Amino acid sequence: MANVAVVGTQWGDEGKGKIVDLYAEDADVIVRFQGGNNAGHTLVVGGEQTILHLIPSGILHNGKICIIGNGVVVDPAVLIREVDELRKRNLFPPQTKLFVSESAHVIMPYHRRLDAAREAHRGGGKLGTTGRGIGPAYEDKIGRCGIRICDLLDEEVFREKLHRNIMEKNFFLTKQFNEEPVDEKEIHAEYTKYAERLRPYAANTSLIIHEESGRGKKVLFEGAQGAHLDIDHGTYPFVTSSSTVAGSACCGSGVGPGRIGNVVGIVKAYTTRVGGGPFVTELTDETGERIQKVGHEYGATTGRKRRCGWLDMVLVRQSIRLSGINGLAITKLDVLGGIDKLRICKGYSFGGGSYADSVPPNLRILAHCEPEYEELDGWSEDISKAKKIGDLPGNARRYLDALAELAGVPLFLVSVGADRKETIILRNPLAD
Image 1 (cartoon, rainbow, N blue to C red):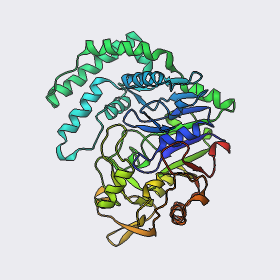
Image 2: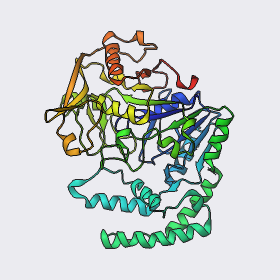
Image 3: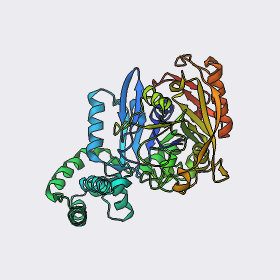
Image 4: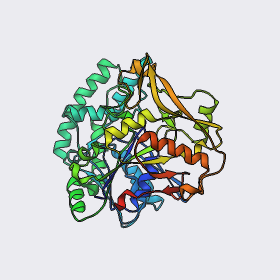
C-alpha cells in the first residue's frame, strides 16, 4: 500500500515540512493528524519561503485534498489567517481542496490565557510552552468539555458550552492566578464570525479519507513535532500535549492501521531541541553556535533559538521502534559542511551501565548520561547541487553510511539544501 506516514524522530524541527511538500507531489490526499499551531513547517520553493502552522504542507500543490484531522487542535484565527495569506500570495492552487474535521477541537482565548498564566507561575520549572493554548485545549478534550468545530458551527450548542466553560476558566484565572477574567460576550461575537468563515471547510474528514483511499488514491499523513515530544513516550514533562508517533496517524485522522503502508522517519543530520529538558549531546561551544547559525536554528513558530548538538542515534533508534519506521529521510546534511571532525552518539553510559536502543524515562538519569561517540572526518565541499549519493564527498557518504548502520533501516532520501529541488531521492515510498 502506497499510503505513507511522515513523523519526526527527534525533538521536532527535523524539516518535516520540506519532506511532506516533496512527497505531496505524488500523493492525492495530505492529512495533518495531531498538534496545533505550536508547530511550524517551513517550505522553500524557488527560493521563496512559506511557513505553515495548521494547513498541511501539501497545500502548494494543485489538485490535492488537504485535511486537518480530528487529532489537531485548531485556532480559528490562525487557520483563517493562513488561508487568507496563501490566497493573497497566490499559493492556494485553484483545484486544491482544504477540509477541517468537524471533530477537531477548537483553541479558545481562555486556553491561551491559562497556558501563559501557568507558565508564568512555574518559576524555575518552566516547560517552554509556546503559550498558544495547545495544552489546555487538549486538557478540555480529555476532560470532555472541549468545543469542537461542529459545536462552533451550532449556535445553540456553542453558546451553552462556552458559557459553562467560561465560568470554570474564569474561576481559575481570577482565584488561582490572580488574572483578569475573559469576557464571554466578546469571545462569543469573535468566534461566531470565525464559524461562518470556517463553515465551508468543515467536513467528516475520516469519511473523505476512507472514500479516497478506497478509490486507490494515495494518502500522506503528516505529523508535527517529534517522537521525543510525545506525551506518552517523550522526555516527560518536557513534551507536547499530543501523541506524535506514527500510531497517532490512525487516531488523529480516523483511519485503521491497515491504511498505512510505509512510515518515514525524518532525521536531522544533527540534533536540536527547543525549551527545557535533558539533552545528552548538546554542544555549548563554538561548534554548537556554528551549527545554530549555519542551520538557521530558530523556531518557525516562536523565533526562539534552538539548542544544538551532535546526532543522537539513541533517540533515533527508539523512534524507529515506537513508530515502526521502515525508512529515513535525512535533512540538513549541508549544515555540517566545513566542520573538521563530526561525532555521532551511538549510546549512553550511566553508573557503569549503558543505553543503546532506549532513552531512560527517568529524567534524573537521562540528565547524567554521558554520550558514547563515533568520530568521523568531515567535509568542506558544497553538496547542495548533488543529485545522487555518488555526487557527495566521500566523507559525507561515510557519515550517511554510519547513520544508516546505527539506525538499522535504509535511507529513503537525503536533503542537501533548503529548496525542494536540493534533494537526493533514493526510494519513493509513495511508489511502492
